[in-house]
Image: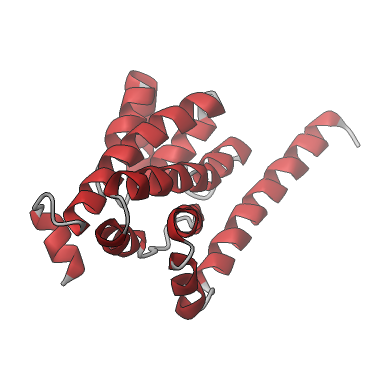
Length: 185
């Protein structure tokens, strides 16, 4: 098989794997997801990993982090969730690295590409640190622009740590955050 054909095949397989993973995670029964909470920090890590591995399908990770922040050390919960979330975000990165053809004509995607070109890791940090429905696009843009994967993970972990800390500490009752209260209602 010629090198261009092999690259095209690898890209197609990467996109299919990400789509399959997203659909598979979305179809996991909620009772099974709830059982993972019983595993403490490891359960939080895996729930965040699974929740953030989905692309464009919402997963209720914030609720788990909020509730576990009340039961365990909020800092430990935040770090476990941030680690899982950062690794889960690799699905978007891989989709972008494999070929962004599905969303490349989107205006929002082009804005994300421009943000990544202009600010690089700082854009990943900022976008990961807030509740953001467009973060998957930033991961896709980072992958498409070939941001080094360890750099993407480091910035993503830092941003996720900020966000997950706010949620976990709010769950522990140590801080009050209006948008979290709205999420939990």
